Length: 161
Image (cartoon, rainbow, N blue to C red):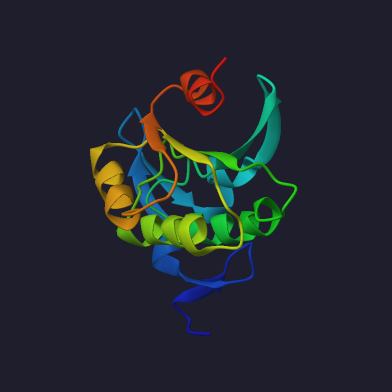
């Protein structure tokens, strides 16, 4: 391991440039943002019953520009939501996470070429750049895809009443 690298909580080697970044708070003072205190890593992904069906909520929100960490979390969660008993309806919550081409490609790889067949997918909290990256990666998807900013409306789109 190079001195410019460190193991993340998933046990993977991540360059320190991804682990630490300075940001400014409201008063203009610099804060160090690092992997250990990203709000998105504290949120667990889960399945939930709603309106007579079940939805998988993949929480990738609050990971900011650390796309390698988002990809690692997605890959770890995929072990759970690829099971046959897991729901075929999935909501990706991406608020406050930059959707890069690499993250969009990993999402597409899992959804289009993974072991699980999905029926509907919604992306919550993506900006225009993120939508374009996902659309480019998801060309030819055999299931409906939507982008909705409100989580309640996204659940209703996945399971209409």
